[in-house]
Length: 583
Image (cartoon, rainbow, N blue to C red; front, top):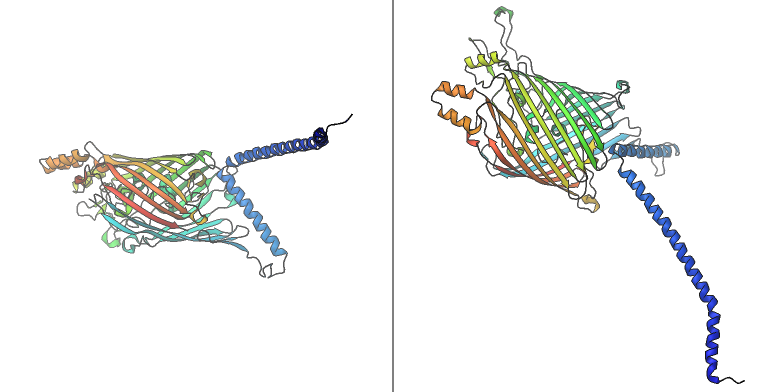
């Protein structure tokens, strides 16, 4: 049979297709194998991602205390490497031609030097605050100003693992040796002993003994460093009732999430004077030939204590509670030296301290100094003691946090001394008991995601149970924009005690028909004023130790103190900016 010539190409094409079938099948098998291999790799990758997520979750759950321990382990590892390197070379030589130094040097935040075994350390640091702003109603204060409010140098360190020390001097604070008797620029100045032999079996850490000039443990905002508070100035409450630095002795310790500190102290170099003036008289029964002279008498003493507990504490979560108490006995002191306690409100500057806008203040609650029947002037002794307490709380959830404190001060007075002062013509309003209080509620929100919980600390001998430098996620020096935060605070202090207050008190005094009536109204109570402030602010944390802050504060309500009736109903506004660097 003959085939048509036209059918030959079709036959060849068909045969060629059959010949290619095994090749195409092999390629299909290869593709399927590749797909199976890719699926296998994808499943492995998903498993690895899940494992990494689990590890990240566990890491995020670690406490700040665990993070510090991890840093210590890394430092110890580095120390061993340096020590091993020094043993592997001849004395006086190393891979670079020099023996490794027997200590670490860190210049990232001031000058820090630390021995390899951590037994000895030294840090040279300081701070500078440059403030400026103005007030819309400078009734008692400045209308505008720009100035240095702090310029400090400090040294601190550790000796032989068991001694710690700190000395801080403020060049802006100045001195007044004529009245104070000591350099007024001294701030922190103490020596502390942390010895293993002082560790009871039921505590995690030894009891630390601290002697010198330091903040008394009374209140959170007052105890913590001003470098790290959320506003330019502390609240009205802290400036009025918070204990300043005093010379004394303290015992303190802490655990993983709690702190305790108690102190016995006396005078402060920040007082109006170091001790009572030389007004204490020679007793009447002492003959003049004995040669006794008038002395300054006994200065005051303080007993203070503070305890804190944080049941929740992680990198971005915190729940903190605290309580503090204070017993203050004036002895022979008056407002002439013990002005912070015996004239509450006299050092309260509307949360805008550089402008010195003071809208509060009582008379000298001790009745000052007076003389009877020709005897030398003697301390009034109208105040027997002060009993104070404070409550505090902080809650942090991610970038948002809220903080609040309340303080109360109960003045117990001697009615017989008040009567004596009245007979001598001394200003002595009020009765045997005066009660004053104050509080604040504040909040901060980090727009860039930082959290205050990561800056919480329990192991600081001057401010345990408070905050240190926040951990900035993207510092300016590393190409970021630093950390940004919005702040807000409401605060109140009430220094009025008696039936008549504010404009009612002022009007009754003005309308009283006789001097005796005026005196009765005036002495019915002690009116130091009542003030309510609102502050809002914006903070920029450019680097660790570099911060710019802007605060606007408005007095929402004001009942004027006895000495400034014209301030009733005033609503001054202040605006301040601070540029801060600390190292």
